[in-house]
Structures are given as structure tokens and as C-alpha cells.
Length: 391
Image 1 (tube, rainbow, N blue to C red):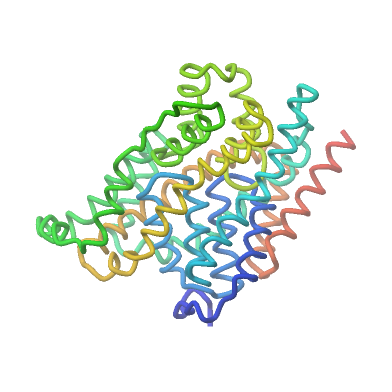
Image 2: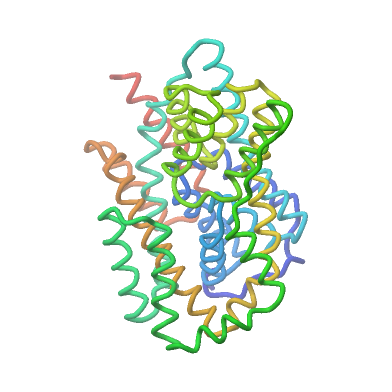
């Protein structure tokens, strides 16, 4: 029986060790940004290991899209909780973040010492086409579960077209969810929303109210609190992160130059794992190793807190008609956004016949086998290195 159609395993089936090992691996090979991370997680926890069903996986994507912070990291934290409860929650998040943090820390050291970072263009040349194939295969599987009926199909198509035309992704996510709720429930959803269980209110308030902080003493304290604020209020892509970092570190505090900021964001984009590890780079440039550690903790800490609160209401969201409709709409919109991001990634990745061939070959292998995705990533990296050396 396919894992996506079976019941979700209980937490008794899992151990902290297997959660930690899986997310250490995913944090090491997770090139390509949040869409790629989500695809890799589905390949491992739904398709290969059968920890949860596709529907449960989609619901977790939906709820993480409704809160601030790095969505793929928050999904990893949720999956750790699903498998091994509270210890799994911490293990999954930490192990997904740490490999990327260490890689970025090494690049930051090279940047400060030598004024440049080691070249990674060759590796990315081969990895990007593989990542595109991994995302496409995940989308094909998830769309069958998420897009149930003409309403959700229409929402997904409309969101995709609007995203490609440049409409803000958070606005599209909210509108997609509200359209489905309105059509399915008429006006009754407002009454249902007013009866949200008391434990839901703190989550909604935590997600909606920004946390503004300013330190009265010490550069490290101010650095930590600034990243804590960013992690608590930031929705959207790496471009939104760039705007926050420019406002705080270039314009307000004057700790970075514009060139240093662009270098920091570039490092976050081309290294595996969460894009938010840009904070590690910024922290190191500003205050060395202590700054890197505090910046990383500051930007990711709100994600752990938000997910810890959300674990109490995920099941209640699916059980109520209005909130289930909200979640279905958010799921359809989120996958449409993921498809839009994939189209943009494909334009950057498929640049010649070789990369097209690598993507097609990876897609065929992903369809016919259930090997660990790390093998495909490693093969793509090897092809990229060889081609770069030959050229």
C-alpha cells in the first residue's frame, strides 16, 4: 500500500535518533530553497518511510504558511513532533538548521579573512536540475491530494497566474483560503470562527502581533533581539528577508554595507538548508563567532515557539467545517505558489541541453525508484564539478 494513502503512524512508532539522522541529512543536501526542502521532506517521510499520509503532510504545510518564519524549517519541526513528540520537535528543527549554519559559518570566516567565498557555481550547475525534478515529482503527488474538485482547482490556477504576474504571495495565500471558506460555508464561517477554542487565540495573536525590541546595552544583545524580531514577524521569500536586513543592519544600525548585505543573502541562497541561515553570516560579519550563534538562535527561536503552540490546534482545524475549508484553500494556494517558484527555478536551472537531460534523467529515476534523494543530489553535484573542470 502506498504511504500516501495509509493512516498516519503514531508517535510511538518513532525515535528521536531517526528524526535527528533524517533531518541532519536533509539539512546537508537541501539545496534549492523552501520548495525543494518540502519536496525532499515529502519524499522521505511520506513516500519512503510512510510516517504520515499526504493529507496530513499537506495540512502541516497549510498551517506553517499561516504563521511567520521560514516555512520549510517550521514544517521540519512539525514533522519531528509528529514522529517523536516534543523531543522530536526540537531534534528535527535543530538538526535541519545546524548543517546549514556550519556551512555558512565556514563561508563567513573565509569572507572575513580573504574577502571572498569559495566558488560553488560548478556544484550548483549540476544540483539545480535535480532539485527541479524533485520538486516537480512532489507537486504531482501533492496536487492529487490537495486539489479535490473544481473549486480548489480554480483557486490553484488563479493563484498561480496571479503569482506569475507579480502579486504578493502572502496576499494570494490569504485570498485563496478565504475564497474556499466563503464558497463552502456562505456567511456561516464567521460564526464558526468566533467560536474558536480558547487555546487557538494565543496562536493567532502570536502570529499577528509583531515583536519589536531594542536593546539598551551591548552589541550582542541588540544583534540577538533584532534577529528575534525578524524571525517573529517575517512572512514571504528571501526578498522580504533582504528588505528587513537592509532596514535594520544597513540603514538603522549601520553595521553592514549594501555590498556585504547582498553577499550575505547570496550565501544564504546558494548553501543548503534554510535561507534564514543568512543570519549566521550577518552575525559573524558583525560580531564574530558569538554573533553568528546568537543571530542564528534569534531568527529561528520564534519558529519553535509558533510550532509548539500550533501542535495543539492542528487536529481541531481539520475537524471544523469552516477551518477545514480554510486549510484546504491554503493548501491549494500554497501548492500553486510552490509551482510558481518551481517555474522560476527551472528558468535558472535548465540552461542548456545537458541540464535538461540531467533533469529528465533525475525525474525518471525518481518516478521508477525510491532511492534516497541524497544520491541524486550527489550525482548532480558530481556532474556539475566534472563539467566545470572540463570547461
